[in-house]
Image 1 (cartoon, rainbow, N blue to C red):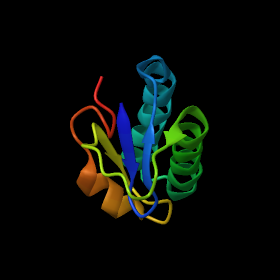
Image 2 (image 1 turned 45 degrees about the horizontal axis):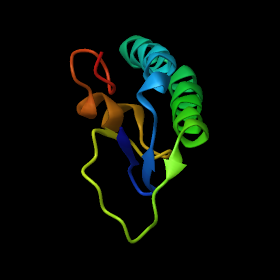
Image 3 (image 1 turned 135 degrees about the horizontal axis):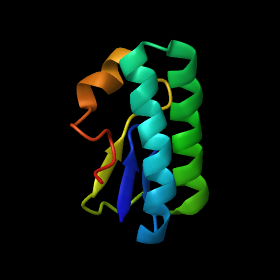
Length: 92
């Protein structure tokens, strides 16, 4: 799956990594729903770090259709809340 981190670029992440990323997404959703700004910041950072670690960056001059778009590291809780779907940022 191609994942875009807003403001950074795209990475190719193997689908086998999705369960671990979904766990972090669930934690992020819980932090957002409870209004836990510190937990939100910590979990967003962990999610983005996990994507970077699991993925292979695509060249900057390559533009692939993204299966998943994640917020920039500096996104606010309110900005991410506006991006959410029923099951968080990551489907499944």
